[in-house]
Length: 302
Image (tube, rainbow, N blue to C red):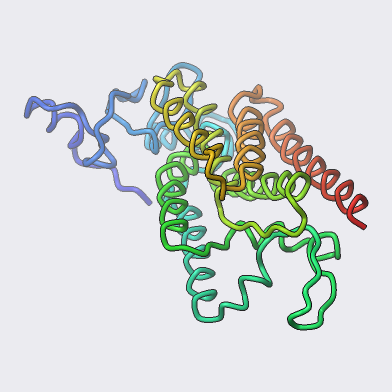
């Protein structure tokens, strides 16, 4: 449980020193946001939406004795999720899984062929005949999103996951953030399966990371932040995606970006009284769309 600081150590100390205020719960984070009740500075990880402005977790907890159900007074994220002590836990776990798979493939290179994504191809090295998603190996749509071949590839994707994932996890909550990540990667795999050469293998977490990028743009628009940095980042990534040299599965990037943006809209924009219905419904619709694409492509290949 977070302890109430003896005084406004974050904001008052920084202001007295002539510097910008810092979050009273995270003294190293500069912020321009203050709790509407106690007026202490709070960072984006600590701010909880209120009817007017934002409140800090302590003020929200103090308001629990209002006659409402206790769950109504619990600290909530912007999307209605529970405020976690470690707002980057799922991001850390996802990075750990990606790194573990990367090390596993380095130790056993044959794993790469067992996990990467391809539609349908004849594999005669092990006399296994035809393999691929069209042959019932649907798990490849998921396992390929945790698979990387080169050091630069996994380094780039994990940096993107860390930079984009942490703030999104804090804003959405763990369950919603995980659903966004997995469905974005799955949508990227589905679009790749639909369009790409069925014998061409693809791999990487880029679809999921592009989903986080699309969600970040939606979140920043919702918070009325300056959109220019995320627009610039998006443009640069799209330029690399559609570079003339090839070698990048642009289908995964586009599929993940679209899915991530659509899910994020449903996460941060619905009215509070129908929030869960809209959020769960949007995730279900994306999953059904992915399933439909996979079934159609499988029927075409077989």
